[in-house]
Image (tube, rainbow, N blue to C red; front, side, top):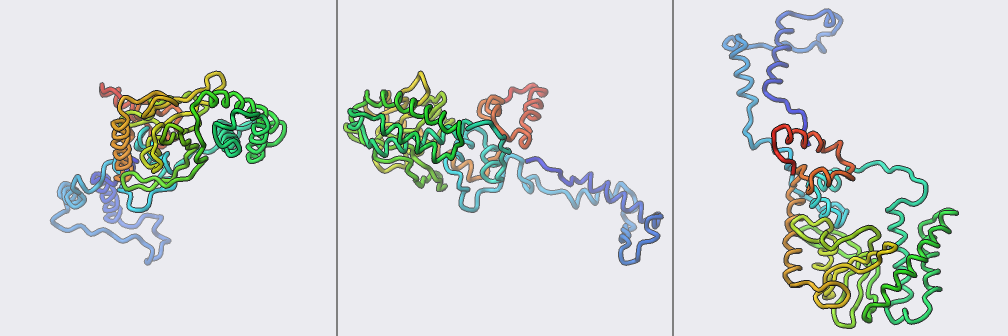
Amino acid sequence: MACWAATPGRVVSALRLSAARSSVGSSPFQASTSATTRPPKITIAESQTSWTSFSSAVESSTAAPASAAPPDAQAPPLATTPPRAGTPILSDQAACPFRAFARHRLGAEALEEPLAGPDARARGTLLHALMRELWGELKGSAALEGDCAPAIERAARAAVAEAELDEPFAELERMRLAKLARDWLEVEKKRAPFEVAAREDKRKLKVAGLELSGRIDRLDRLASGGCALIDYKTGRPTPNAWQGERPDDPQLPLYALSTPEGITAVAYAKLQPGGMKYMGFARDKGLVAQAKDWNALLAGWRQSLEALGNGFASGDARVDPKNGLATCRYCDLQTLCRVHERMSALEEEGEEPE
């Protein structure tokens, strides 16, 4: 964000040099220059022949009100439709306003590094394809009473084929996905009856005047009434990521507020070997922990999401990582925002970094 500024002092120095050269005459390098290309001489009025008065005059003419140049932390407000990045705009704004500005308005991104085999993102895509295909065939809890092995095998093969993996990675991924599906269905069998109402359903979401694109991993219609929003995760998710003024993962709260089906539960489906389970909040007892006050929870989510959306739209571009340098650890924009220089400056001044 910081840029070189033509300060009054620099302008004065530049004009002094130009005026001095003009008063001495042409240099040897000007001898072969035609009259049409020779730099014009600077004429200084008689009343400004002293450098002191000349400097004062230039500085007066170049001085600008403090409000003329916006601070580095403030970008121009968003005047057009927002980028098509969807809900990551809000999660980036929560993590660091500059990150959201750089990624979604400047289009800054890191170069991809080649890896041997699928990376974490590719494996996540495989998992989502597996669950989409599996529940497209099973359709709900009633099918779990029968033999699910054929459906699991077909879903694993379809997911790997969609990813266009080469052997031997393809066979290894088919085996991994099939085992993952078998283990996960054991978790699903413990639930109350449900029907899968939507899978990877694309939605248009609105918050603070922004129209964002999103895609719901899964929407279950519950026998007890209402619907459950489900988001597949393979890492170490926590519902605490939905809480606070700057939530780490505002995606599911935004879906809950924007979905017209009557959401009564919001849950992560943690598909991590050895620790598979549902995690989240619900209006009623059942799938996940019951919220103390469901309506208050939704109201808090709405307030924080509106603030994040307004911040992005208004041009808030502060280098303000939520958890200090811990937030920056896996960010690929450090050379652009120079956060380490800023943090070092704060430490030298005796201040605590944010």
